[in-house]
Structures are given as structure tokens and as C-alpha cells.
Image (cartoon, rainbow, N blue to C red; front, side, top):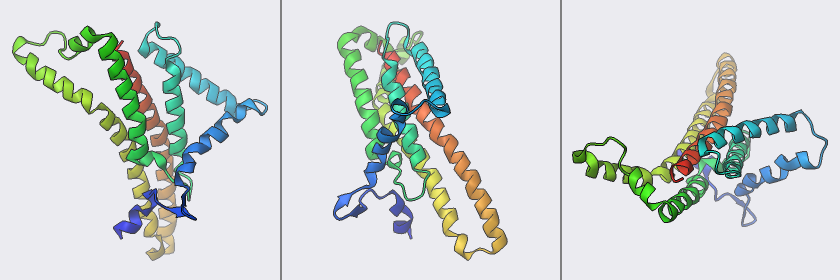
Length: 224
């Protein structure tokens, strides 16, 4: 039963020895930029408004001396939110529910921030290990705690995104698998429940993308 339950998250499914699941991650590159070759419509205006709002917010978090740095976080948000929404459609592989993808996004970002900070702002990085106002007795413990918290940041980013995406999909799968054994009245109630869960999953898809981008922005602002 568990094998069948988790088969929807198995990236090894292939056709003619060619794994096609991860192609869903690339569909956004094909579909999102259509605003550049079609007449602008309401969706393009809405998407540009969202990106402008994110740009202003990330610029506030990063400071005024880092022009253009927000684009990498806006691109990360766009990529994750599209993959999250693609996973809500039937028969489309949810790549953002796998640690393979989430860790591949979080680890390079964190590693680049750490290398930049320790190479260019070494004193600031050492000072950041001991929060201001820490008693002298607690300083060695605070250094250990801050060091551990820095090292687990890419893991927490990756696990948070993957766990939140896989949890909703598992719940939808479990509820859907009970449908054939239910009566007609219960099936109608199950359909309403599934619709409500899909709405909740849509909100989770946006929120988790936003959280990933904001935390990445905050980690970047700490090294500058």
C-alpha cells in the first residue's frame, strides 16, 4: 500500500527508458514568457504587478546599495510557485516535493552567501556569531548555536518546501483512494472536501514560494 501511495512522488517513472517527470519543471520557461510574444493581457499586467511588489519588498530587505540583487529572488519565487501549481494538476509530476530540487535551490544560494560573506566581510561574519548584548559567560554557547543554525539553513529551506508540498498531496491521495468504497452522499461530501483542500493547496503553493524567497533574501542581507 505504501509503495502505491508514494508512487506519485517517484521520479523514476519513465517512457522508453527516458525519464519525463522532471520536464514539468521546465514548462514554466515555455509558458510564463508568453507575455513577450503576445498582446499584453490582464494576466501579464497582474504578473508584472506581483513582480514589482516583490521587487520593492526585497529591495527594502536588501537595502538600497544592492540594485538588481532582487531579480535572483524574484526568479526563484516564480520558478517555485509555478512548479507548485503545476503539481496541483492531474498526471503532472510535482518536482518541488522532492529534496532533489529543493536542496538544489537552497544549497547553492546559501553556499554563495556564506562564501561572499566570509571572504569580503570576515569581521562582520564573526561578529554575527555573537548577538549584541550577550553575556560573556554565554558567548561560547552562542557561537556554537549560531554556527549550527547557519549550517542547517539550506536543510530547513529545502525540507520546509518539500514537506509542505508532499503533505497536501498525500492527504488528497488518501482521501481520493477512499472514494470507491463510499456511498453516493459521502462521495459528494468527499468531492467538496477535495475542492476545499485544493484551494488550501493553492494558498500553500504561493505561501511556501514566498517564504522560500523571503528567507533567502534575509540570509543574503545578513552577509552585507
